[in-house]
Length: 288
Figure 1 (spheres, rainbow, N blue to C red):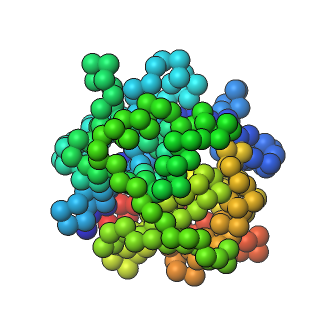
Figure 2 (tube, rainbow, N blue to C red):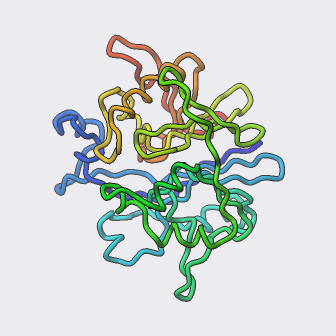
């Protein structure tokens, strides 16, 4: 098995939205805002090479949106996925699977590209995977979440013939997190607070268990329990999921891989007087 951190660039989002009810006087120390109250976040994907399968987890924003849309997010230091893959001697045609944690535009946008005014799959030979609750939600979104589900990302997946919907078993308990099997070395933790049916891939790599945090924990700064994004659809559910996940991460010594932390790529956690916090912070490469 091989793992590769795939960085496609940075973007900016409002700091208050990213930290919810936490005062700026506190979160600004964790991720300093610019003069417009915007903080910098990463667009980091993860490639898992497992036997003959080359599994890409999430795809960033992409570059097919118009200039007006992209101007809202101040993309910088960007790199096309094709270029990022070329740097590790892979082509977009080599990707066999795209595992989408959820369908918000900053996670699925790179899965679709525009070519001669046509929207096509970026990875022509890949199967695209998404959970059933998330697909249903993206196909018929509520008014609050609708702006995060762009038809340019959803409709091409639907008509591609390459989309696979992951059915989830009925939710059984609010005492533990639901986990489903994806491949030999990958399972997915299911969470619903940020958006319905979000998947957190957990990769077994030697003696390590690496969890791709998606938007349950966008950054190290979001580890404290009350630090919940204003973007979350059900913040109380997020709070419960964070508590359960962090206890599990502490018990099992998980490595947390951050999709959106512009500075910190991975960490483990430890128990402190203030609760569970980041312990060792490191690059994924140090485990490989």
